[in-house]
Image (cartoon, rainbow, N blue to C red):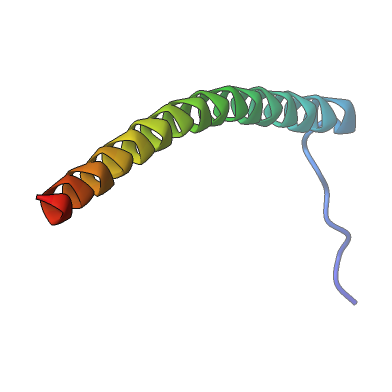
Length: 67
């Protein structure tokens, strides 16, 4: 039979390190969500400007057709 494995670290220390890493990941995910929200808002603004440009182009085409 194989000999039992001996762990040289305290289980509480290991769990604390894991918890700290999870907290850091959670914080980073929160930051990403905030940045994603900002990008979505900016994208909506770009979309509105694009719609305005498309509307202007349609008006120009109709103006040329009428002439």
